[in-house]
Image (tube, rainbow, N blue to C red; front, top):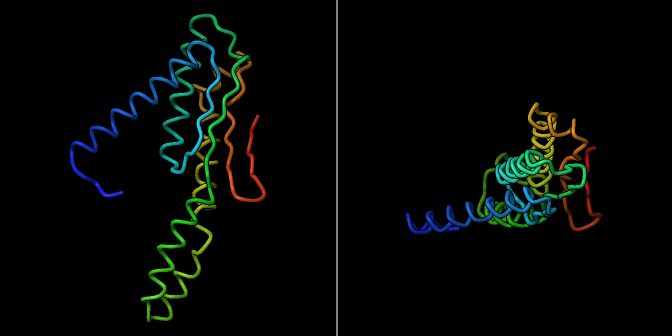
Length: 158
């Protein structure tokens, strides 16, 4: 997406604040939240941090955190669709055989690599001392669900 300047960045920041405020508020009231259409590892990490914030607030009010069960769905296939189309355009114009081979080598692999890195982040986040304090209250981690066209990949750590 083309950056259209400060106004667009302000609008994106405002949406980010509203989205994360809503997630945090709902969880702090004991309402499960499923967040879908996540494509970037950094966004997943932000959502996971917001999730933990909300669960901590719920726990602070005496809420039964074992009742919360939320999902953050991380999509994989759409990333490859975009990246592969961009790489395909570069392949058409590339004349150097070595560069062409490198470009061909990443076709269909970027999304899986991104998914693996995000799953590693999931492991880091939900093994942190902050999370362990909640887990001691028998809270299950937010499921990290990775989606691909077929088969559907669902990654849930307990």
